[in-house]
Image (cartoon, rainbow over all chains, first blue to last red; front, top):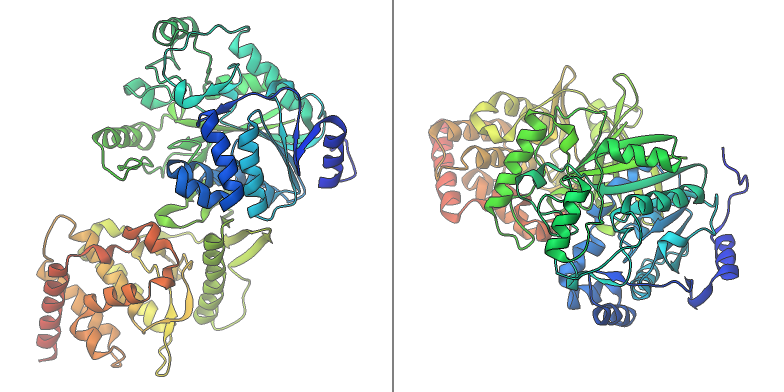
Length: 351
Length: 254
């Protein structure tokens, strides 16, 4: 049952945003807590925002940042959204929306979407996408994801897609100058507690009966046991080792503790329960949650599983590592049906 | 319970889900939110509609229907057809029995017109055929066109695609494979429906038709050139296969 019996329109949401935040331009609002997190450095982000306004986002990315085209526009990325079985009447909030890989598909399926991100230039790019797609049900808010407490009971759906593991990070992050590089840093709090606190806010911001869509890599992804690097720190083994040991490795190699905490299926369920979610559906994602080929309920069967790892890399070349990974995938999931080691998790949490 | 079973594979922009509603009740959901994907799903709806009418010759509950069509987002539901599927990787010889049934089904369903092209499936593979107690069922109508290709195109395509997978590690087909192809072509040509050009150079004809009419597959052939495996035969293989088939057809006739 919903607390708000009257369906809110995009205009209602817009009005509330205007009352609480300053308008940057059109439908972009901002709190006084901006930051920076992007795959691009600040100069490139500004450039992308500028050229996308001039030549349209698709053309801009195709011409200037072709390596990001699939990251931003691939229709494959929205493969998990149907798990929510949306009716079209939902209002949604997309935490850490960046360039809108999920915001735009959500907006096509729902009545309203608020995309939140700390990087203003990413939102300017996304705004250009919204205009290109002729969508009038999207607003964007630039602010700190950990401090969004103005939206209690407001949204029917919350999207946390590849974001939870970055919540413990602080300060500006230019990923290309940070990922796997020695950048000494100290953090204020415990990563797990920060993730829990964030999820509690997400839970509070959902209306009664609201749902959370959370996608994250599995802490026990089978590949990390066979020499694949942890995808956020570029270190070996840190995801599944005890947290103290992972900290020690990360301090030695990167000069900072390991904060991108991942979870197992059971661990994530526990965390979501602790955050207040009453019912949680877990799904296994292959080969990962960003470009899913197969999404299978954790309670479902792997009987008809076929390998999903492509033999070719991003440049279209076959690699022996991928060949071995594909064999491993077939062995783990088709033959042995070891669900616990699935590469990624999507969890749908019900308030 | 919902399961993603296919996501934008082979250059398509459609995601396919299997939905189980307890017990044996299942259906398929297909979703698209890009212009190319939506175009393909609309073809799928038309294809199922045409196929059902051609197959049953009477009004029945639609197998395929639209659930949502809004804001550049199209979601359709297709009833689940239970049965067995052939494995194209097993090649022509091991699939010969099912191919015979598929050809009989093709001849009974696909109309032949003297003044226009015939209905076109566009991805007619043994992988898109289900066999159950009700007979053969053709699925995946994403490239359907009511007047898309000369009669026999889809059936011949299926034949050569299966041959391709069967002879992956060989340069030339076996005589047995050629016999299956020529028997199948003879069956298709029972009422002299195939052009002389097709009889003489069946594989060359298939490839030329695809190359000359690539718009029938939208942008998929550009995005994923391997979508239609018959295009991967070398020119030498095409000439060899066509020669072997034609000699067989001639000797059959003699």
